[in-house]
Length: 582
Image 1 (spheres, rainbow, N blue to C red):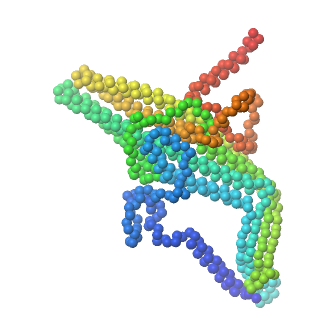
Image 2 (tube, one colour):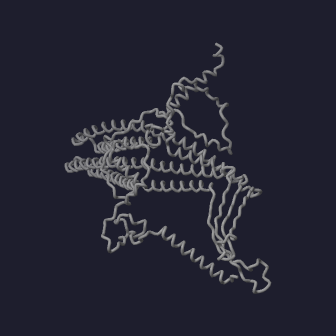
Image 3 (cartoon, rainbow, N blue to C red):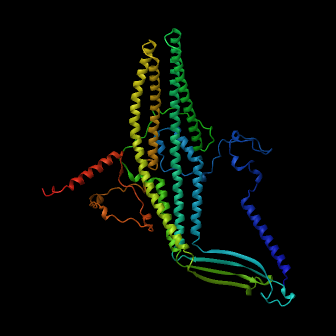
């Protein structure tokens, strides 16, 4: 007979051995082999440049001093970020822009965050898929039970002694997926993983567009700064001329002060432009994954910058490549699977459990044949009453599916709006730039003639100042309009999901017409009364039929309005009474 004290001692010794073994295993798994080999300082400041650190990081005496890197060291090849399918930014034919975007794709931390989220979603999908398989566990334990003969069997103090129970073995559990609930959950997790991939593509597309826009914005601001500096130099020349006229008595001090005020206003505009350019440069540094103030741009102007030519009439199927639309489709599919899983959860579940091992009251007889233990059990569990919890879960899943369906439709409409805005911006900014260039040419010639007239005393100072201001404003506006042209082109590439060229095997490309399809009769138009009824509030089958934009993207909404007006006039003429009988 094993006493209670002996059993407690055995239990404590066994628990201590397990704890020491677990600690050793965890230490070997999660701790580095040589902690002294790690660089000093917190993890979040090791890669920061020295000039941005509050104090130098501690270094070992035996380690030679090395210069700190400006950015985080390059990652391994296995951790490289995925590249976009089309290098649409190369159509601007700017080598510096290409290098900046390549650096952005390699170093940007928003992209790294998106990649980490993909890994999380993939692991969630593996967890959901693994839940469909049986689970097998190893168990072992020691238990002190008293009184030895069972509860209520001790008739005296001597019979209060305990008995030790030792056992170990394997335990298995499996839920039979009769209604497919586990399968729907695995499908939902897989679609969420696909949505995370498209979310990463959304981040990449937005980041590339923002990097290109910031780069061209920097060039435009540099050009406008040069214009402001030239305008200031011209204003100073005029101020000198006014000073000579004041000395001759042909002008007053008031005229001289007015010109100084004009110079001060130009200085204010120049300071604002320089401030904005520095902010754009710092924002561009963040896109590149570098600290602010560590990059330099060699370009200085948008003059003679080639713009990609985008012809009107692009197929609207290109919008299918937009990653935000693809992400919305994946989220909608995951929501539909959640509805199916919630519906299957209303049905009974069947669980099988089994156990096999060894167990004995004596440690010496633990491995003997008579100590074998096993058990098999099957459980059928059906819900009787739970306060309508499962029914409400199904209603919640359906409501979430309706929300994602409406969001998907809104995403498609927003995509169409983005394309139309970009095409309109390209057309209108081109007309605006042409008009501003013409106005600038005329103002420049008029200013040259005005200087000669003013020096001869035939023109007052107010008129000369107005001409100076008009020339400066025209030059600044013309430079700004060229940037707006570039930005509209970038927005169009972004609105189309990156690039306008159709790739081989693109699932979103329109089908190639064949001879049979060309000869096939066209289907009759469906009248509004014959249209299919809208999906009910609880029906999630619409998720399997994504809203695809059809037709072609026009260069302007004016053509669509004219076509709609022509259709209305034709219908009105057809409804006139008596004309058919005549």
